[in-house]
Image (cartoon, rainbow, N blue to C red; front, side, top):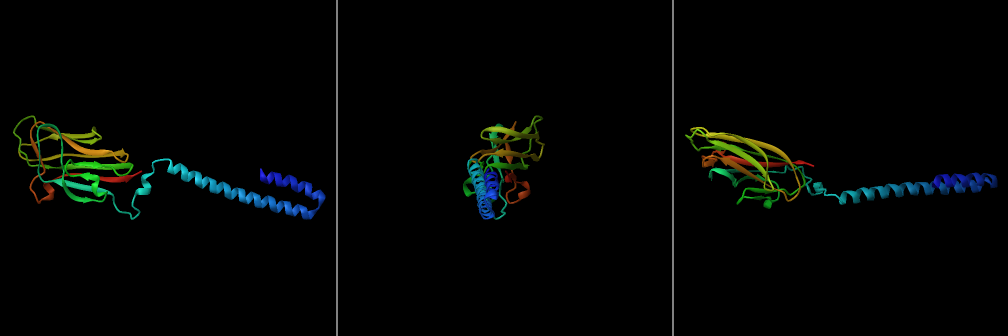
Length: 207
């Protein structure tokens, strides 16, 4: 609108004289440049406000390029039959906040909004002679099972079902691992040998 207004003044100035004409054109162009700058500034401010109005936890992510993840294992968690939580309490590493994983309950609390990839896998030394020795492992978010894997136990020892699942979380969501077995089972065995441990691991994938 400022450019058109200046052009109208310019036409009137041509009749009156060239000097006035140049002055009006200059003023119109300066006003136009200022308006363009103001629009850019306002748009940048609006973008910032829009971002601030939404949960953008990417600003909380360390900028060092550090991998955000955790790995814990157990060398012998004894679980009764039926459904029950798994307490995986020996730290391999944790690059999230130190309080993000509770070793007393095996619960991980998401510190950031975004996608996470979790895995639960390992070994059981429990021999089972019964014909019905099912075992299942489930990923649980806020008390609800969101993924499951299952199999059978053997007469001697068993690689337990592996579970890998990616899920979208918000900050504060709690993730645990549960298992269903038809008989008491030990998760993890042979302390000191990581091959025979049972693992619960997770990593932040991104927004």
